[in-house]
Image (cartoon, rainbow, N blue to C red; front, side):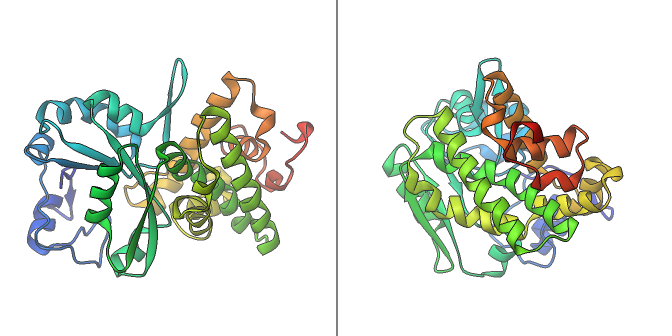
Length: 310
């Protein structure tokens, strides 16, 4: 396992993981299997691997892929657990597409209602693997599936991946509701409207996204759990209580070095929608962006649905 080397309480994180079998910074209190070896050299970690698993904030991916490309085993297969999107001068770009293009290999995706600490505890949960090559999807299913981590397959990498990214925007809205002290009615409305906009976004930009995908773990289940737990909801709740702090301070205080994905995804989605003149089609996504970045008051989260409220 490649680990970005950093010092925690005067010790190198890789050495802590390899001797105590615990990631004391990002997953404290949970023992890791002793056959996991933390490696600070990315090329060394990749060398000889026939299955590559990508789990990191997507903004760090571009600078790592050239190293992976040079060191990887010919014919390797990859799977992305990265929840985010990207864009270039032509528009929307999937993270898995960036990996496919850089490495020239098949890439599956895994998304689901999988809050890390609950998975580490062994609580039962589900997840979804989206595939293009069935044999590769089945291979990763065998690698991940356990009695407490139930893996289903979907021949829809785009739908599975976009669900995993877009639900983080909705979770920001849910966190705003929590910070304002709103009840279950309001939060349920945000979740429902959010699911509709997720479906609308997927179908607007990609053909062939399957409606059934939104009822897999990667869809409605991940949306629900993220809107009731997880880092995006938690940080948005803190922002609603004290917007003057700003996102960078809140991220630093709450996430202990992890990255807040929902606000970044909201910004990226807004840029894509602006380019195709589709902002008015997504009032909730737009409102969340406007609160996060354009100075709108947090309590306007409920003012959605009309042009004048955008």
